[in-house]
Amino acid sequence: MVANEAPSFEEFGNPATDTPGDAPGALAAVHDVPVKVQAVLGRAKMPVGDLLRLHSGMVVELDRRVGEPVDVFVNNRLVARGEVVMIDQALGVTLTEIVRPDR
Image 1 (cartoon, rainbow, N blue to C red):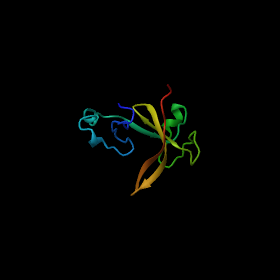
Image 2 (cartoon, rainbow, N blue to C red; image 1 turned 45 degrees about the vertical axis):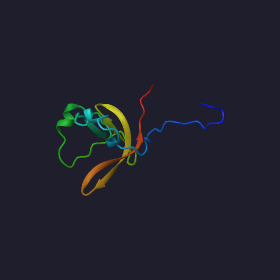
Image 3 (cartoon, rainbow, N blue to C red; image 1 turned 60 degrees about the vertical axis):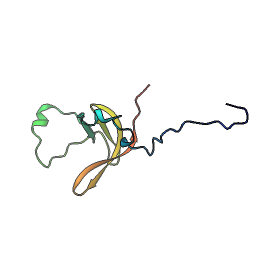
Image 4 (tube, rainbow, N blue to C red; image 1 turned 180 degrees about the vertical axis):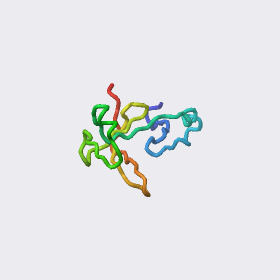
């Protein structure tokens, strides 16, 4: 670089706007890998005898209150938290927080 010459920089993609199609084949190998996704509303502990007596219409008290976020697990690893939503007679989860692994 010459002293009076403006520096030139390489252009990089914008992670906020780039889509998976922008890098053909970059993630194509993992697109069909099955993963287990769970949205956990809460947990409860009870003896097996109480569990066997449960029937339709009974209420099980969970360890969370109404309005608290649900935990979203992928392959048994906590990855996000979110809110339960109803979409066309089906329940879903809107992600509100991505959980970063401890380093």
